[in-house]
Image 1 (cartoon, rainbow, N blue to C red):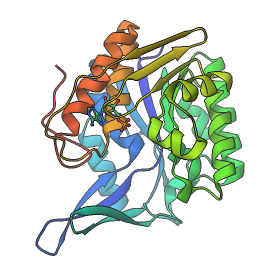
Image 2 (cartoon, protein in one colour; image 1 turned 180 degrees about the vertical axis):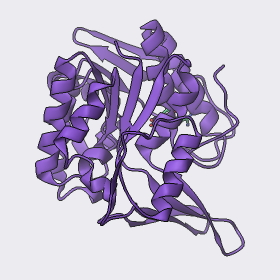
Image 3 (cartoon, protein in one colour; image 1 turned 90 degrees about the vertical axis):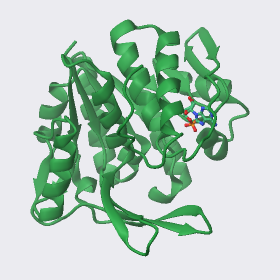
Amino acid sequence: MSKTFLAIGECMVEMAPNGSGSYVMGFAGDTLNTAWYTRKYLGDDWNVGYYTAVGSDEVSSRMLDFIQGSGIDVSAIRRLEDRTIGLYLIQLTEGERSFAYWRSQSAARCLASDRSALDASLQQAGLIYFSGITLAILPARDRTTFLQALRTARTAGAQVAFDPNLRPGLWEDADTMRTSVTEAAGVCDFVMPSFEDELTHFGDADPNTSAERYLAAGAGMVVVKNGPEDVICARTGDLRAFQPKSVANIVDTTAAGDSFNAAFLAEYLSSENVEAAVAAGAGLAGKVIQHRGALVECLQPA
Ligand code: AMP
């Protein structure tokens, strides 16, 4: 197996209030968060790359510098002349966070528009990671292209991991979201949903139901996260539950699932031990949620 972990999706400019009326600029996005933590957890013998499309402008260059500066390979990222990167702004209303987005014309929406560039990038990868947000932002025809490219990469030996990360506001409608996510699960070795999303948007009675549904769609292994409750790891005919360690002083649950996925996959890729992988995932997520923000610098593997 090639020792390249390739995450695919959209990274955006983040404008976060600094508490005195202005904003601090950063860069974030669900798949980038996972790549960022995976870089910290995988050994130096692994290359961690990110695949997306950005503009040719200054802010796009700054984003690439940021990603590269965290040790992630950006060499495959496409640069487009006529677009730039998306942006979101964090709004605080009486302590509650909400988000305003400017991403409908972002360059990342074109990430699957060039099949040969996509194939060239996927060919290098041993593990390909993407999310429901990656799919949601694509034009419908490019979703088909993207899944075909994943099938081709898988036939050539790559493994594929997917977090459904259900965000109906990004999709044309909820039925398309459910159908597309179910089809995507069928080309995956690992499907890693958060039960809260699955309950809300698929109406699953419990996490076991979510696991069974994605197995029936063709997933190899399903890992269902559920906040402080048991993590369910299921393969056909084998369903196990693992209790994550309890976490005190939770400050901000942003990137809990993204960081869990990173440490789970990094551990599983080296040990193929599900219990150790859940412990790694929950251990990292448990630390991340004790800090503010998606990317917590100070955390090191245990
Ligand atoms: P989620 O996507 O919210 O289900 O959370 C992903 C992972 O983060 C969970 O599987 C836990 O390992 C961890 N996590 C999230 N919320 C909590 C919590 N309240 N207490 C302990 N761990 C949590």
